[in-house]
Image (cartoon, rainbow, N blue to C red; front, side, top):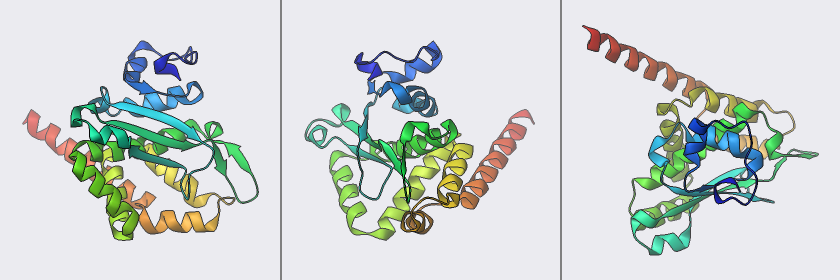
Length: 212
């Protein structure tokens, strides 16, 4: 894992990109995509985040969560983990997750980092409350996923999110139950497109006002 020196880092990573690996442990095989996603979140540069491959994550491909033991310490010492399924499971087969297109991986990781942004604004007790709400209420899950996407869109990851969501919803070999869950609980590609459009209009209006 690159930031801890456990594996040799990829050689095509620029120093500008590498700086976002501070306090992170990242499997070398996905290092560039993770660092690219992290580059959209400079606020997380000092956050401790472990990216961990798992053989299977129940009903998910990636999952962002606090390290529970860190919630027993001060807020400043909180750590997070993003679990990543080592295999992208299809109806009849599975492929290594790192073989997905870069754009899809960056969008997926960018969404999970949106969750960490959401955690960062909460107290330790608030993070525990978030976890309880997430496992007991579908409505809570939907709002939490909307917030994660909103963070990602506002950081400039809109096109990656759209690509990831369309990849999931349009993939013929993904289990229908998983696609139905994504459609039911997550923001749609069209909604993300509209968010990006509104954000661009707001930025343009602000630029024009600054010049007037």
